[in-house]
Length: 121
Image 1: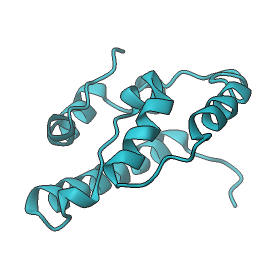
Image 2: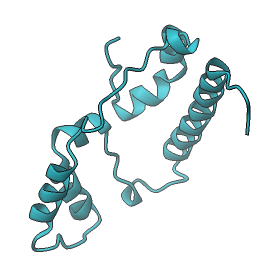
Image 3: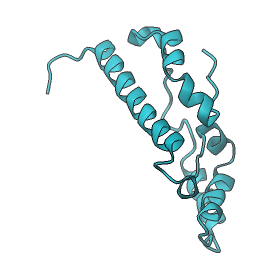
C-alpha cells in the first residue's frame, strides 16, 4: 500500500526485472540448458497476425491433437473479445522516464536471437 506511486521509478524497476528475465531465458536457450524440442517460440506479432493458426502450430509442434471444433471455438472466443474493446493506451518511453535507445541496446541480444523486431516509436 502506498499513498503515492512513483511511476517513473516503477517503470525503471520493471524494465530492469524484465531485462534480467530475458537474459536468463536467452542463457538457458543458448547454453542448451533447455532442450529446443521442448519449446516453441511464438512472437507476439505472429500471434496477433494469425491467432488460430498460431495456436494450431503449438498443438502440432508438441504432437497434440487439435480438438475437432477447436478452430471454431477459438474463433468464436476471439470474436467475442476483440482487441481494443476496452479502449487503449499508448506506451511512451519518455513519459515513464525511460530512454528508448538505452532499452533497445539492453534487449538487442534477445531480439536478435529470437527475431523480435523493434516497434516504431
